[in-house]
Figure 1 (cartoon, helix red, strand yellow):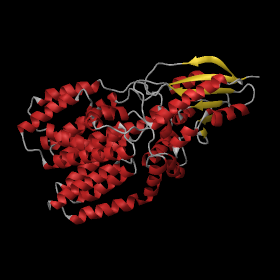
Figure 2 (spheres, one colour):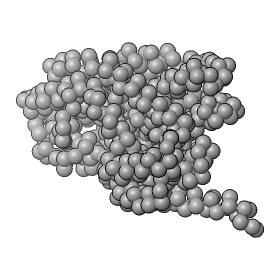
Figure 3 (tube, rainbow, N blue to C red):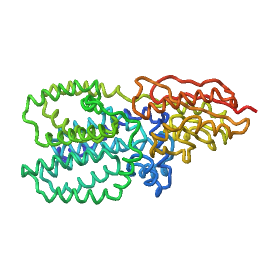
Figure 4 (spheres, one colour):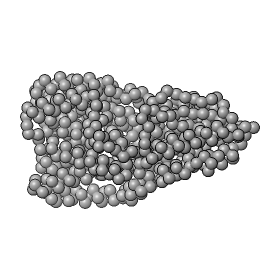
Length: 492
């Protein structure tokens, strides 16, 4: 086998090695306790396959990831490691996808750097170990960005069809894909005005995407009106500036900035495809930010849709840098290697397993944070009844966000909690699980309402003549998504 014949084998071996290193980097937290969003995701996916799209009318996401997770759980089980393995698969698949995208759109060196970025970027390391859709969003964003550049910048018209496939899948994976599609449309219009693209390709693509998304559009409109994201805060302009740090690591970002600066200085001007991809990324971020000024729906994790255009643009620019650029990239790799997620994103499993021996079927579990119920349901014994300020929970596998803020604000202890306590039999037990403040307090309407209900409901249980506390207050270390629990028994 000569050198030319050996090249595909060598590149395949290099990619396999890169995926192996990435696998080691992204398995440290697979067994950690579920946090709020993961409990909801597993709960929704546990519904019958035909019922998942309808169940999402109470949530705020499209159905594709949940349908895939449902099938995955049937095959591999519902343990934390099993469900997170699906996200890990998507994260690993992003490595060869990035190599292909960088190589086809730019150069082989850009492909290698893009693959290395997908293998080590902290954002993907974090979400490769979470039962959520964000690693799938990153994978589709990479493929869509490559097909956009190949179709409308490099002139390879067959990629118009592939772009339609990737964007349709993205639209059915995360709602922020709407901003990416709109930004791509704006960049395409810029190219059309400069007479650099054929109008029929873009028009056909827009029509096909509209037809493909039409069945889900009524659900999106319902979600926007009735579920939205009451837990989100209106983002400040500063959040736009820290998006790259959120994707590639705030500590690593100065090293990447140095590499970019000297690469642009060495070989100007920047490739036209890079400018178009940056236009897509900037346009997507601005649209999302502006929309969140009207109706807050901003979360750093949603920037997964930006990973594709930013990763490919970054890889192309850095690939043109001087040889010593490798020193900066080694520093970046070192930072990434020690930037893995913490072992636990929530203490709900610890709290639940500690208190479970004291809970019996028919007992009442009160959660002043309604969205915590699916995770509690995962770890507490079966047969218990769940109550939140939004009322008795009919399906503890998911959170019913429909008009949730109004229901939460109206869920006073006098009208929702005490009547249920009054109906309990002597000897029955009441477990109240409440969130513990950690770090900066969110000022979203939802978070403020949860804090009000928490103080009120805790005080109501302590003051109830029907209840006596048993076992005292169970507290656990502070941190993110931390709860505490207290157990009561109805007096005989």
